Amino acid sequence: MAKGTNGIAVRASGAPALEIEADLLALPVFEDELRGGGAGQVRALDALLDGAVRAAAKAERFEGKAGQELRLDANGKVPAGRVLLLGLGARAKASEALAASGYEPLRAAAGQAGRAAVKLGAKALAVAIPELGGGDAALAARASAEGALLGAYAFRRYKTDDRPPALAALIVGVPAGAERTRAVKDALALAQEIAGAVTWARDLVNLGPADCTPTLLAETAAALAKQAGLHVEVRGPKELQALKMGMFLGVARGSAEPPRLVRVSWIPRGAAARKRPLVLVGKALTFDSGGLSLKPTDSMVTMNTDMAGSAAVLGAMRVVAALEPPFPVHAVLGACENMPGGRAYKPSDVLVSYAGKTVEIVNTDAEGRLVLGDVLAWAAETLAPAAIVDVATLTGACMVGLGLTTAGLFGPEGPLVDQVLAAARAAGEDVWRMPMTEALEEQLKSDRADLKNTGERFGGAITAAHFLHAFVKDVPWAHLDIAGPSHARKERGYVPKGGTGFGIRTLVELVRRYDA
Ligand code: BES
Ligand code: MN
Ligand code: ZN
Image (cartoon, rainbow, N blue to C red; front, side, top):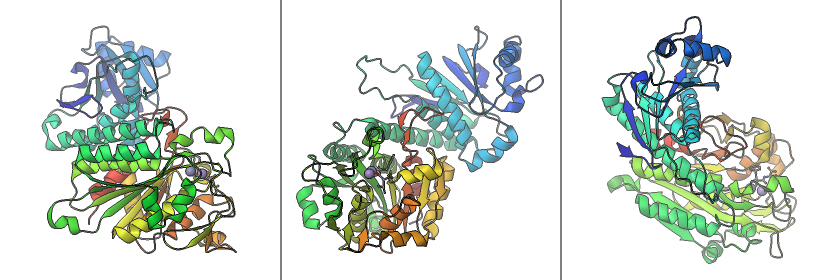
C-alpha cells in the first residue's frame, strides 16, 4: 500500500462492496436503487440488515438525491462497522453527465464520505464506485479517491488542541478484477498526487498574511522545488528595479514586506528541454487591503486568500514534477502585499510598466492586473512560451457574474482557451467561458497615459482581462479568474470552508493533454 502525500494510504479492492473491511463503508447510490423493493447495493444491504435500510430511508426521507446521506448501523452484519449511503441523483441524468464532468458526482459523494470519516474518527474508509454500466472504472476510481482525500482535509495549523488525524487508509471499491489493472493503479496514484497538491495549496491559502508573506511564499516555492527536483529562481526588490517592473513595484511600495518574483521550472532531459515551454502564472497578493482605495472591513477579511492563484500554479508544479512531461513547464509569480501607508502608490500616479507602457492609476484596489501585467510581459519576453495560462483572484465582478463556485475563462479565440475548457471539464472543475467584449476595451483608455487600470463597474471581469491581454502581446494566452471558487464560505462535497485549491486539477489535466 503506497503512503499518500496526505498520509493516507490508498488502495483498490475488487471485493463485493459489502464485504470490504473498514470502519466506515460509503456506498454512493442512484435514486432508482431506492425505488420499490430497492435495487443493486441497496437491495443487497437491505436483505443483510433485515429491511433496516428501507425503513431508515423512509423514516429519514432518503431518496438518493444528490447531496443526501443516510447513516446506518451495520450491527455486525457487514464487516464495516458503519455504512453511509450517499445520493447520486437520477441514474440517467448522472450517467450521461458523469463521464462528461470527469465523474464529478462521485468526487462530491466521496468528499462527503471523507468528511464523515474524519468526524467519526474512522481509521479506514471504504468508498465503493457504483455500477456504471459501461463507464470508465479507472476514472471513477480516481474521482472517488480524490473526493475522499480532499473531503478528509482539515486546516488545523492554528488549533492548539493537537488531535492527530485518525484516517490512515482509503479503500476504493472497484469491479472485481479491476483492482489489478494498470489503469486503476495509475488512476489512484494520480489521485494521490493531485490530492496531495490540492491540500498543500489549501494549507498555503489558509495561512494568515503575517505567516504567508511574499518572503515565505518564495521560500515555500524554493523548498518545493528542492524536494520535487525542480529549478527555482527568486528575485527581490533590487532586481525588480533593474528589470523596471514599475507596476509590480508600485503595488508593493506601500508594504513593509519586500516583493518577490519567483520562477519554478520543470525542464525535461535531452532535446525536449529546448521545446517551447508552457508557462503558468499565478496572482500572489499575500494580502490585498485595497491600498489607499481601502476595502471595507468585511471585504478585507478573506484577502489573505488573494494569493490562491499562485498556490494553484505551485501546487500544479508538484504534480508536473511527478508527471515528467516531455516539454518545459514554468510557474511564475509576483508576490507582494497591497497596503496603504506613507509610501503607498496613489490614485493619479502614473506607473511605467516593464513593457514600457504607462498606466494611470484610478483605483489602487485594481492591483492584481498591475502585478500580473509586469509578470506576464516578462514571461512572454524572456521564456519564449508556447502558451501562457494565468490563474488569478482578479475581480469581484466575476463572482457577481458567475457565482461563487464557477471560474471565468478569458482569452482570444484560438485552441488554448478551448484546451483549458476541455481540461477543466475532464478534471471536474467548474469553468465558464467569458467573452472578450471589444467595446469594453475602450474603457481602459486614459487621457494622461497609455492606459488606466480600471474601467466602469459593469463588465469589470472583462476589462480586467483586456488589461492583462495588453501585456502578453501575441503569445497564446488564457486567463482564469478564480475570485469565486478559490475560497468557500461553507463546506460542500469535497470542498472545505476556506481555501479550496481550485485550478490545480485543470492545470494538471492541461499539462497531461498538452502536445508541445
Ligand atoms: N483581490 C480582489 C478581487 C477579489 C474580490 C477576490 C473578492 C476575491 C474576493 C481584486 O484585487 C480587487 O480588489 N478587484 C476590484 C477591482 C476594481 C477596483 C476595479 C474589485 O473586484 O472590486
Ligand atoms: Mn484589489
Ligand atoms: Zn486583489
